[in-house]
View 1: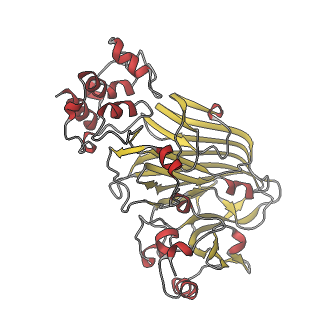
View 2 (view 1 turned 135 degrees about the vertical axis):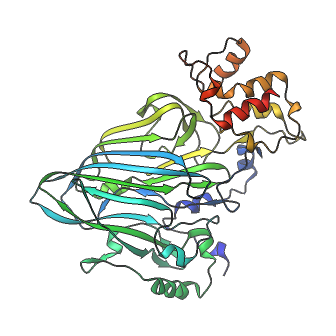
View 3 (view 1 turned 30 degrees about the vertical axis):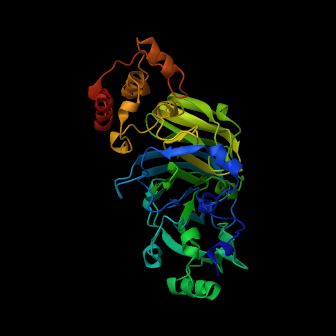
Length: 439
């Protein structure tokens, strides 16, 4: 049985879409990717690894309780656990309203297993628990809530088809959460695949985790604070991917959230896209700090004309009342690639490198410039532009008209007259970058 014949899933995991390949020459020309300039450090194989996703808390049984208010804050931080990639801290503040008498309710958090052909964990490793979710905590009305963990297989549809929907009806039976043991899971997979494990490379281990806990809801207002950290996913073409299941909020009594705020803090000098599945356009977002938006013309994750947000400092904020999400939250940051390659030209076009920097903020780390064999291929003007990039990122207003004209032409530049050039505030990487292009 060939792996490519196995899966045409009904509701595939995120990695399924990321492994699709368009074989037409039209698509190839659309991307026009010349060469990866920055080495990709976060993936162990050629395509990608999809470690986890965040999700809303859900009622495991039917409920009359509604989500009156939610503030979802997502903060990207360096991954000091594995040493590469990004971690995302998730902090969710909920206000639930119970219209009836005080009652207990089983509440859950659902997370898929890691997948993608960049993930090589063993079944023994991942059955111990979701390996890429850290510091999972829940407080209700200021008291810590203990939780349990269950393993729930995706529903087999026959003919190697699986339903990747996470649904409490699949695991809450006979008044309790059903937990499949590792031996039971292995036996069920052996029965389907007859001992072969090719499916692991694409869709992981075909089960998901359910964190569940008993929550006591007082009559009226109840506050739940939910925090955890998880590892961002990645592709060879993207520095990071963050995914979060918003539609799970529709399982509460009001089929959504009365007052919803989403705050994204991806760091300073960051450009990233948010898939417009739950909003229409960039005008629905605001910047708490300095930022601007543009449209990404090339295709990313199957999306054309994707909004791209450029944050010089601060956060990106989405707020909506009577929010009933119809799609999930997905955030992407492209890796550094050159566009507009001419197949008739051999060798590296350094001027295209400079032009590529107009589209978005990039990580200015000279350690990732190992591809440069002869930087003298750049003109003196191009070197000056590159040397001054860290200052432009902070909004420095240049006296040199040529430099100012170039940075004004970028998608991300925001003038900040209050900023005074000061290399002492630069990171070590930025100082190396400046000196590299100065020599």
